[in-house]
Length: 606
Image 1: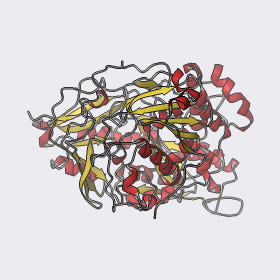
Image 2: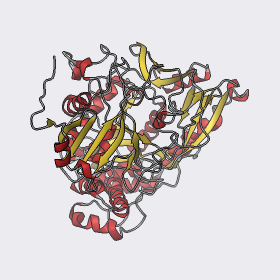
Image 3: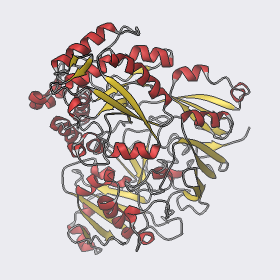
Image 4: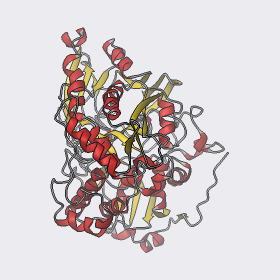
């Protein structure tokens, strides 16, 4: 099946100089990069990204032990489970992101970018040398086809941007211009980050139904050279890669081969690392970091324990409540469930008390809400929504704390009172509503998530004292993805990483469309006009102060929404790795994040 979606009204082609002038492009200036605010930090003649080693040697193999399995190699459609790294290792975009700045882009497939002061349009000039892995040139036709295909039949994460594009116009042999339908300053950057696919590869093929049947042709440094469904994917560095010498790529993509091996669960992943079958292991538990790395390879120096700091927000990690279900709709019920979750005792039991709790969605960053009553611009932004805001949004909200004892008596009494207020009373030893329905919770967990299971075991005992029945349902990675994509759960383990440049992706995370539309990241089912207003302010802010105020106001709305029972976070990454793989001394602002390992690491045997 071939998708002939048509370009009428959406796509137009204009190549003559007269039309260029009519479109106003002549008044703009081509640049090597773009920033959300101000100018990008790196000059036009920069040698490499500041956290890359331009003299890094090429060669060697890096092996990553991954949890779960995979059923597809196409990360751009909703169907199937895909190794997440393929979005970043196997595809390229018009611009590339520097992870040492909050939000700046530099030329990749495009050698230059132009835009006006209002950023209602942006034009890219393709690099003359840009090639796909089969040697064919990357063309404007490929760019236009990629945007339309992804925006209409690709993964839902691409649809929002496509709806905000008014026209896509070819303005020269290697030039493409996007005009936007609304005032949204982030769009000029976002359009530079969509993957560019080869149009001819998908002629007479069903893009949205593809999985393992089609190995992607890519312009990226790596190509998929071998795979075994569910077991491993091997990516090999393309010796003919077109962009090896451009500034953005110097010192990156240094390994000859990247192998992703898949294991049933986290404990097996760790054992594989200890046995020397993988190159690195990210340790999320501070207690294990201190007490479980006493094997020989650490003692003899073959395995290095590296601490990688970062400045990015904590994001949110914990157990999300599905407010599409009546039992979770009342904020008092959600507050009661958070209050009954004895984090201090759980943290002491599981990590020796070594890890700090997430206090808000943007904690650990300049975007974090301030404690106490909302003031200044934050208050100005929130006041129009005051009637609809939950308690704590304006006044200030802090998570309930326990005394650290196993019984947690005070908080259990508070939770009991909140549940009674919400109409859930104890009847014959069980918590029931006015209709006599028992309060039961099933938490879905991914196979191998032993830490979450341990937390649920402790939590179960606390809820029993409130007359609530808690059980867990363990799913393999494919089942977990399918169930959570259609929001078929009561509670689920939930993790969302957030950046220093929140923007359009926030709609996918918290927007009302996600209440019913499958495949979004709004697992909690929140429907908050106030949150959407703050997101719109993030997108339209012309000053950094307004941007900060909008982010801090959004943080208040999300945190006081009480949608997630937060657990621990860390301002560092604990990364154990074999000593043959090295990383630069200069670390990116985002730390151990996308664009770090394996991107700027290299192999160097001692």
